[in-house]
Image (cartoon, rainbow, N blue to C red):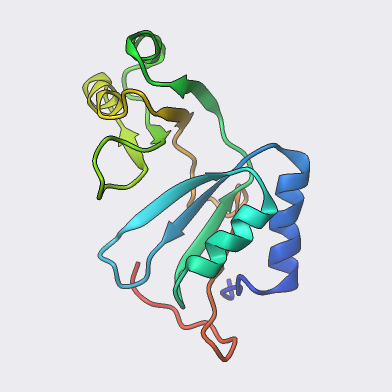
Length: 160
């Protein structure tokens, strides 16, 4: 499939439609030449999406999820932690979106075991977190993906 520019009007209108049909959209940014570094964002408006695009570098990969399955959301306290651990099913792959207490870490984490979920939530005590089932961001039927073009409007793919 030919790479699509994030400035393409069809790409933009498809993503805008997501915000018209659901209150929030999960967006994944895969940073070019950053050793697999990526970030997940839970956005509430198309304007937030456009602001995110403006902060991306040329060739970054931007993927909007068409849907996601929320599990639990709220401010992390002991009760929230207990609810999350009670809801976790062994073998589940969870994505936790929300800041932790450390200044230089991503505002998201994966939880692939009850111990990982507990550890990640404990570092987010007092912060708002949304836990979702990990979205399949490789499935092009469930995502809208594009690449940030360079100043000439061309896409230059790199290593992700």
